[in-house]
Structure formats: structure tokens, C-alpha cells
Image (cartoon, rainbow, N blue to C red; front, side, top):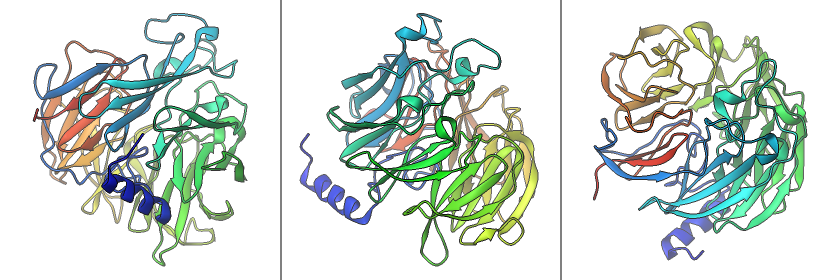
Length: 425
């Protein structure tokens, strides 16, 4: 693929700096892992006939979010087994990496990947696979390559035209709840939370796929790590694990600190802001100042409280001194970021039900996507205001993926379709 000269220069500068492209939504929750966009004129209202720029049928369901690289959208799907139709056997399971045109939504190419079997079965004691499926990990890109994590099938690297460059295992175990953490990029590394597969966080070389470091002892975690800038300008890797939040040196994998603020498994991703990470785990919420060493449970934990309604999967979003989340009862909760004090806990109309997608903040609005009841838009304000409730009457499929924003549009996926939502140009 040839890049526009300006885009090519941006890629070179980004690679030299060890960061992703500033104007692309290039990994889960965006380049800074906060779920925040600087886009303006984002739509508040839509339906199957209003404010739809385009809609594209997908080859299968998935809970992974789309990412954006220049004029291309990438996302993962699965087919053949454990889909909504309940078709096939495990031997029929197939993973898909899809590349779609940002302007028109046309699928430019699709890469099929045969999984390493056996995978987590559809049925069995405690199986949660029907809740989210086999494609729950969002891809990441450095502007030249796309990196995908597919559980025990491993980490993959493709060029932007779909040529596979490498595949590397990070562990072979499975779990009754499946796999879900997404890869993140740091300098020349692809970092994967392989808690399910090997009770480790693993860093792979971006070019060769070879393992660079491995941090062991990360258990019961389906949480995507985040990179955080500390007050002294250094970068730390923050990982939420069972019973604790941990900070690592992202260059070497050495553990720097831990805050023992959790008490069970964890799915929500840490949300960084100004050297602080805001974390959720069921009924636990906490704010931890990064940069400490050793056990920082008391010294660096700014607050640690029971949060109203809890959150099993969805993460915080930060805005203007407050953090917001959708709790397990489908209510929206606003907390003061400095103290954790509850500002409000409000129900939505109609009831949102289950919300597993993480929120998107942009243009003074926060977008909360329900698993089965559309998208709710509320004002990004400590004064609660529901702005809209949007549903697709002709698409009632499950939605676990977090939306992204680009050029005045919301880009989101359901199990059936990929959507671009906004005003047609």
C-alpha cells in the first residue's frame, strides 16, 4: 500500500517517537487509552434511516472495537461456531481480520485465520463464550502494520494489505470465560496481557514477533493494560490483575509497584489522566498516582471506595475533574475524580440493561452502548442529562464493542454490521 506523502511523513515521525499516529484511533480506547476524542460536531441522534453515512455487513460477530489507520478501518470477527445462530462445531470455528474503507465502508480485504484447537467450548459449566464470543480483542496499529491477539492462537502481525508477517504464541491455556484483553504498542514492542493463556504479560518485538520480556504472576485478568506518563516524564505500564493494580517498566518488564485495591477477577481497563489511573473492578473503584515503588496501597492510592452498582466489564472515562461509568444495573454514575465521591447515579430511559462496552467521550457528549438496547448519549457534565437513545430497528444483534470517533462521525460495530454514523457530505 502506498501512503500519501503527508501520511508517510507522519508514520515515520510516529515510529521514530515510539508512539502511534496522533490522528488515528489506532488501538483499544484510542492512542492514549482514555476513550476520549477531540472530534467536534459528533451526532447525538441516529436510527436505521437517520444520520447513517454507510453500513457494511460483517462476516461474523465480535466484541472487538474497530480501529482506524488513515483511510482504513480494521476489526476482528469470528464465524462457524458459537455465533448467534448457534451453527457449526468447534472444528468450523474461524477468525477473521477485516479491513474496510473508511469513506464508503466497502470491505477491502478479509484475512481468515484458523484457530488453534481446542478453544473454550460453547457449552459447559460456567461458559461465558455466548456472552461475547471469540473475537473480543481489539487490534492495534503503528501506521504500517496491524497487530492482532487471538488468545491461545497467539499474536499476529499483518501489513496493511493483509499479508501475514508473523504469528507467535504467548500461552496455550483457555478459560471458561474466554479471552479478551487487547494488545497495546510501546516503542518497538507489542504488549499483550496473556493472563488467560499463561498468567503473564508478554512483550513481543514488533518486527520479528519474538518474545522480549515476560512478567509472570498476572492472574484472573481480562483487562487491557495502559501506558501512563508519570510526573517526572517517565512511562509506566499499568496492568489490572486479580486483587491488585500493578506498575511495570515497559522496556524491561520489571515490576515497579502494586496497589492492593481489588478482591477478584478484573475486566475494565485502567483509565489514565495526568499521571493517575482510575480503575474499576466490580464494586471497587480507585485512583492511584503512578510513579511509586513497592507496595503503594497506602502511599499512592488517592481514594479507594465501593462504587454505586459496580462494573464488571465497562471502564471509566475522565472529563473535567469527574469520572463516569455505566454500572451493572445500566445506570450512569458520575464520581469526583479527586475524592471518588458520588455526584450522581441516574437511570436511563428506557433501561439500558447490560453495558459491557467502554464509553466514548467527545464533543461534550458521552456515548454508552448497551449490549441489547442501543446507544445512550448523555451530557459530559456533573449535571445529568440524557440527550438521546438510539436504536437500529432492523439490527437487534448484540453489541459489546466500544465506539470510536473520526471526522465528525461515530464508527461502531454490532455483531452484524459496521456503521459510520454522522451527516453525509
